[in-house]
Length: 133
Picture 1: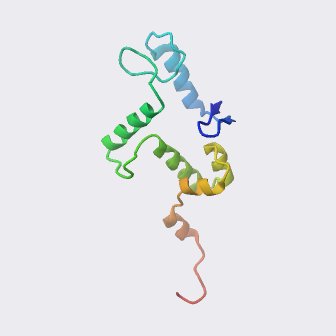
Picture 2 (picture 1 turned 90 degrees about the vertical axis):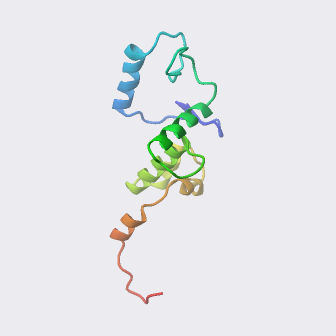
């Protein structure tokens, strides 16, 4: 269960089997000795929880820059929300379902996240039979 930071509402999201297996394997066999019950810890000793949620965003931002992803100056973990929303919409998932996953109450907010693949949309759109503008 996930509690949204802004709304403080709990959401239950599906966990892919392979992701769950990777978590279980890590916790049971690949995790350094620690008394912490937090899943994500620093990768080097001392193995402790991150100071705040922004630490994950900084790690993601560095990784995105390292692989050459250029874009918003605020690259970070939040970029993955935008990518996930766009991929879901472009694969035919309804805006309502995407909004539920992201925890949005407004479909307009989801529209900010979910960018349509206009080339793919143009390929399946019917040609306009009216006048050319």
